[in-house]
Image (cartoon, rainbow, N blue to C red; front, side, top):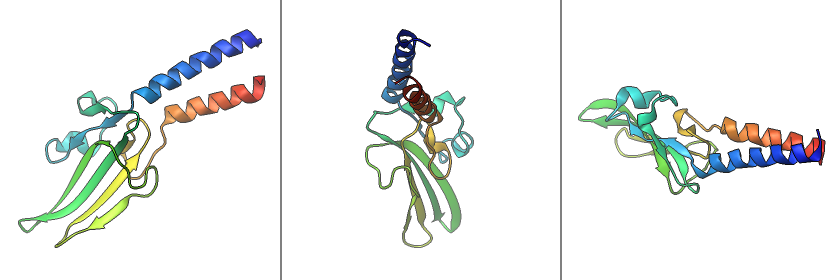
Length: 138
């Protein structure tokens, strides 16, 4: 592969990476309002996908609470301006009378679907490709 082709390929990979990084998407929903969709979201559920700012995180909050004597679990997913521990273990908080919350923030595309953190597969793939190109052709 000559230098001109490798530079063109590298420019294309960088353009894709910039596009991915400039339009981060997170799930935005609540099991209180949309129990089925928000409990286990997937990328085909476009009605609960929201574009967030590049400097924002995706957040998932799980709550175990007691409302009027009934134990209830709720999940909230959305964009977040701040983060306690991005891409690390979730932050656990307890409150008064049977109230417990877990706050999880992450930086990947649609990463607030699972419990715990995930790294965006797109970013990992692009990083691996760039590493390969740099190692092989530079």
